[in-house]
Image (cartoon, rainbow, N blue to C red; front, side):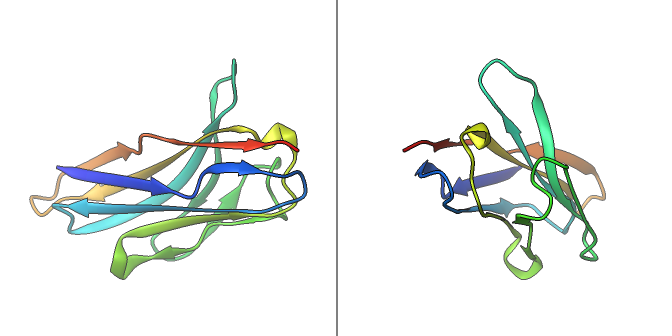
Amino acid sequence: QVQLVESGGGLVQPGGSLRLSCAASGSIRSINNMAWYRQAPGKERDLIALIQRGGSTNYADSVKGRSTIPRDNARNTVYLHMNSLKPEDTAVYYCNIDVCHFDSRLINYWGKGTLVTVSS
């Protein structure tokens, strides 16, 4: 089993920045894709940033140019750094990872989510 611990959410002023982290622990041989999703009130959960094990990244248009998604493979941790926050960035942010277990099973895991509120 794998546990994901997210941190860094909270209240942010418009124009500010956020730093989220998601640390995975448990029976992990390696992690392939690591990603961040977000779900705004009344909307679907959307993929906003993804990083492959080799470091290739993809971003949704809504966050492109003001976000990065670094990862630390040694710590099984993924981060989300976002600047120039807007009220429409208010959402619950979820991390999502593809774990390869020691028995070669590949399983996708979700974090519990962390709320980010952008408001003055």
